[in-house]
Image (cartoon, rainbow, N blue to C red; front, side, top):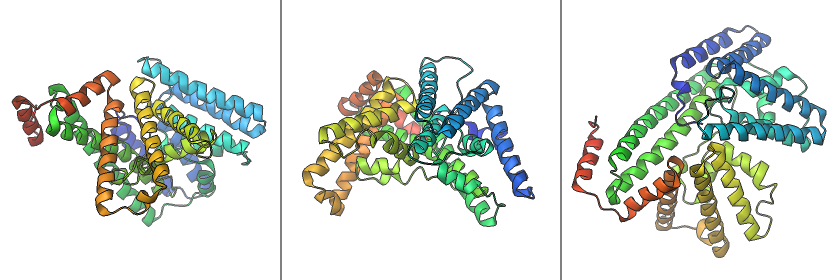
Length: 397
């Protein structure tokens, strides 16, 4: 998910998706519906990514499919390395503001899904033998840009029999899509608000700081969750259920709880394919902390190469480590039987940590520390108060 990527708000994208759904709805048999789904998945990616990017992803599909089909550990490991190498090079070029045309749209999602597929074959899952079916999984257009990250068994089980669109799925899908667009519209307003606050430096002092933290927190949630709801809604219309990605994360009363609710498909992927293989929580506590820090650093860098993403990820690892240490010291007694006041205090601490950490997600560490310093130690000058009042009235040019 890219905060600057308006793909689902692009009129051409909306029109393409609408045509795909209409043709899918009138498809008179399963073979026709399957062909329509695969054709528009290819067309959607080609239209909004490009021919070279399409070729790169198809190449990764071929490597992943045939190495997985071999069931040979060495070939599967080679395919994992090729996928990871492609992701690292792409992320590095993006971080360097490269204009290279080969960088595939949604590369992070492709690679994580391919690695999941290969690791599951290593663990005993039977590989897919029909390449067309694997292509449908790979290029499924609702999730190709913004996720959620899917698991092959669950997805393939649903696409093995593509049924006609039902009224219930249509109504639920449209409701989710509408909610997603409302979220995305709200995210754009908060993004404009954030830019204006940053331009005028009105995050100094308690009032400006609270407003700024609220703005950036709502921006990132509405943006990420909005894209997810749109993808889930489009998928539901054609009868395919994909994983829920957000579950009221800002109601969390601990960092552990937050990461059980935020970007669920990503955090579950990292848990299953990195944290647990590293030893998870079964190892010594200090090693457990190291595993947490590595896992969260990967989540940070998955969003983009650069100091701000790495620092943000490490901050999440630190927060989780402190949370686990606290539960260990209290033997979980407080988390199991919190009073309303304790829950309120826990929620406040959690949201303060999460909101402050978002500053590092948006800004380089030096700038982020400067903003935090202004919030904590700065005083709000009279002119800044006027700017905030104007911002809240929504009339700032």
